[in-house]
Image (cartoon, rainbow, N blue to C red):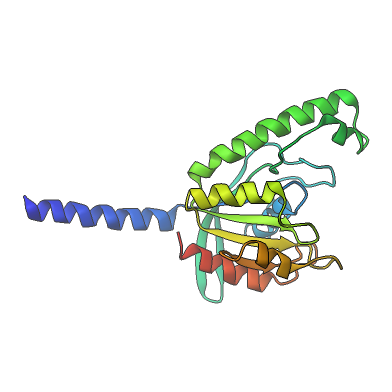
Length: 213
């Protein structure tokens, strides 16, 4: 009886480890227009030849959860098989008038604002279904924003492994050290998705993140 219990115990541990390795779900979170979907697109394009979603200069272009199953990444002899989950941009306030500033009509702007609000709610719910998260922030913006603090706070409370990516380091106002100071408990890597700058360090950090899952 005791031996069977011990065997079952270790079998569950083994199956849990194996399952997590096989079903490594990676969520992309961050404020609107930080480059979250652009980074997810680059990974998908590089390794599957297909993008995960549409991007634009209009905030909240991504308003629904988007998936890409079995994205196999191979880097320096190491391999990862990921399920990528691209989420809508997190915002504390969504005003339809912000969409009108980008040339959209009132009715379309109101619809987008409603969809974006639902998208934020869905993104938070999906935290229960991710193994690790890449938080993408704009390296030219203040990292101490309420949105960033809310996202990272939720991840910390749920004990979800996190990699923070400061995008847009090609811009003069980018300041990675400020992001590192804001989130000293996490690994921070600066990249430029637009120009593919520093992607090697990103991949190194991604494999390090996988070890924490």
